[in-house]
Image (tube, rainbow, N blue to C red):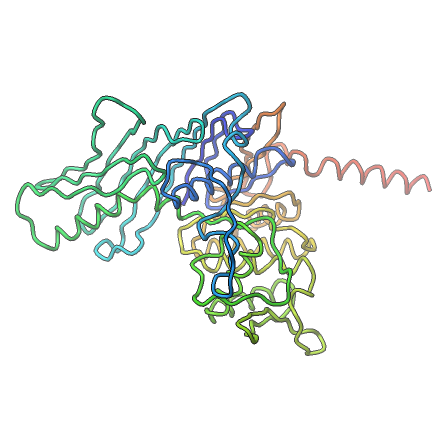
Length: 441
């Protein structure tokens, strides 16, 4: 999970910091810097996937075919243009700092292992020039907690210290690299004879720590603000896609429906959630020529394309499927869950998101313009379903081209210190004028 994010000279952010909670909410007007926080981490994820030294990269379409239906590569998450479009005006460098932790994934000898990671990257003219940080690994199987620190600087003439962790009889060495993966495993140097089981465990620690920054950044999952079914059926991929985190909505839809086609449990979870939220029963069907469609059961008992159910309902699979796919202890960035939904459905969706996040241990960042979404979150606090310690609300403001980010205090009754800036004041003024007009009539 992400603990904190700091940005310097990234778009509107001259210097901004967010300390995250299990549920972190961003509010504020358009063009105030909310989406930029999400974009910064998705850019890091994309750059790490490319295993290069450039933060931004060209977005290139690829040829499609029945066996390869995607317009963009699997590791193309976002297109922000060139570097000059994300660095603050007049500057040539930016910095992103991230702190977080992850639980062990796939290292058999460390069943309860994981790591706490802190790192910052400095980018000049789109080139990675410095990264530094620290890692504390949690490895109960070893009875120790390896800790390392590093500071890599491009073009440094003096020999750079090799990150290492020393324990009785062994030294684990790591390599800092000129790429957005930041580190890679080095070697296990034995200084005395050790049992084979311990050597295997040490190699697992080497892998865990040496890939920790990349592992942390890969625990974030964007849910984009543009979503919905645009066609009645889509190509079925030959194999289940590895993700639905695709930049282009057409690619996301192909991936989402193919994931559903290959995973009946995911189908059942989605069907239950959609029926709970909007009262529509859905099912996935395979069509001739390797195509897949999402159908809904109308009130007359007749199946029809779910794409005909309306724009609001069409949003839901694109929100709910990624949540169903995300492993525990990982992070979802959700932009505008309220888009095109009726106010009652906004409240119901928010309540469901909070319930699933807490029950299944997911971290949620929610960017919203909806009073109904905020009311549902604050109501969860007031009714004891969400602890104040598990919630952070940040207000964003564009002050003469610079983002101002303020954390809002929330008490146990769901009251926000000083109110919610920019949300209710206009509505209250309009309501007051309306009541006065009724009196005059």
